[in-house]
Amino acid sequence: MEKTSAHKPPASDGLSTRAILVITGAVVLLCVFGLRAGLFIGAMRETHAVLGRSGLPKDAIRKLGGNGRAAHRLGAYLRLPERAAPYRMRAVRLLGRCGAPAVPALCRVLDGEDPGLCREAVRGLGIIESGRDEDPVVPPLTKALDNPDPRVRMAAATYLGYRGEAAQEAVPRLARLIEDPDEKVRLRAVRALRDIGPAAVEAVPALGHCLDEETNSLMQRAMADALAEIGPGAATAVPALMRALETGDVFLRDRALYALRRIGPAAAGTVPALIRVLQEDKDMGNRMGAAIVLGVIGPEAHAATPSLAQALLSEDGVLRAFAAEALGGIGPAAGRAIPALERALEDENPHVRIAALGALKRIRGGR
Image 1 (cartoon, rainbow, N blue to C red):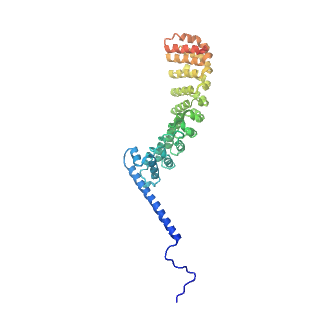
Image 2 (tube, one colour):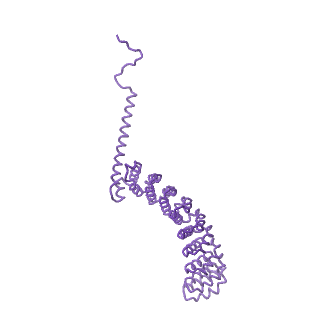
Image 3 (cartoon, rainbow, N blue to C red):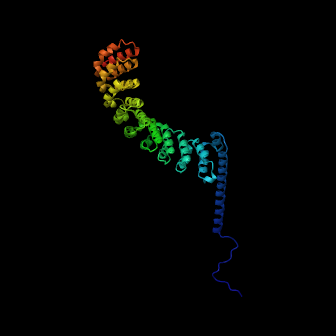
């Protein structure tokens, strides 16, 4: 007769409650995630098919469900292995057309190592319109200024310039790019600072320093343009602009004069250099520019009164008119020029006569 152990558990005809719960949960999870996996695969197949067909970007985005949904799908597509997603470049290009919803996906592309995709991601961010309260693309574009590929840095600087003063937070990094080893990157950075305008005042020391050190005339002109657009806030760069007036580059002298004009009375220290330009520059346009700046500087430019009075005798009617206006800008301090201005009231050029009359009123204390 067979003996049964006293410790053997009794036989059961069914599963325990715990086992049933575990199996039920597993089946539910398998169904949920299996369904989601199926939907994801289907969405990626559809995205792949849309990307593989030629057509207008707006049509492709519409087929992918509109801007928001398309941005989500394209972002997911770019996360696939490269072998499974051969249309990555087109996907990035379409993301840029999806607007603000595409910013997170484009930022992930910028974190990658493919320079071509990074450049396209920068372009995509650059064409996204800014919001009313903040510009979501400025931070990633600013980060792209540190990209090892010079073409990516160049593109990022270009599109930051297009944002204008909204890109103010990028100014410190753009200022550092002025000394980038790549000449094209340096030029784009300077032009971006120009386009940002007065909000780029933090870059003035770097611009002034590089204006003195730079040997490329095109770069120097761009720096003078940037200082002009910054305006009165660029006053600390006046010494560098004054030295630019001494160069042999007629176009650089023209740009420097315009920058000094925009800076205004704070450029008073350049009066001796401006007098030399007024008297000696071979370019008539620069002589006119010097007269204009002297008038903008105002009373502090009184030392230029004799030179401006002499300019009233110039053969060029436009220069005579600008000289008269400049004397009016200096005001009562230009009293020594009253006889010359009175003679100018009989000038054959009506513009000169009008300018002389206005200057006499201002010098004599009239309005």
